[in-house]
Image: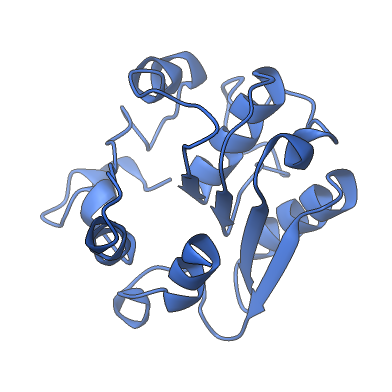
Length: 176
């Protein structure tokens, strides 16, 4: 969730930042169709607007879903509210807004403890030096949803920036 200033600065779009283009290319190499949709106004997320974009894509037992930060929180809400079966799910530094910084209802939902059972595996990637809010979110997710595979990585921050142009641990979890 960038600030409005970051979002409109002279830099790549959210869907073309960090490890996302690299992972998309890695998945395409395997013959997978890989899309990185740009969500509307990520600096001021609106759940219904995000759903309107997300739900343009077919989502079924063959679909792999990947969410970073606020996008991970979005996937958790969507999967908690839609009792569908999906393929693998990857949550990278998922954020549930534990401090309620977001003034909208984006994170007003009950995390479904049975969520992982409707997937082919949920992989959660956490960095030891990520923000405290992310650590709090990760703890809540792990404590609430049994069956999640936690991948603890060191010194990856929020999985953004130059040191995170690739995320081979995520690729390997999705492809194995």
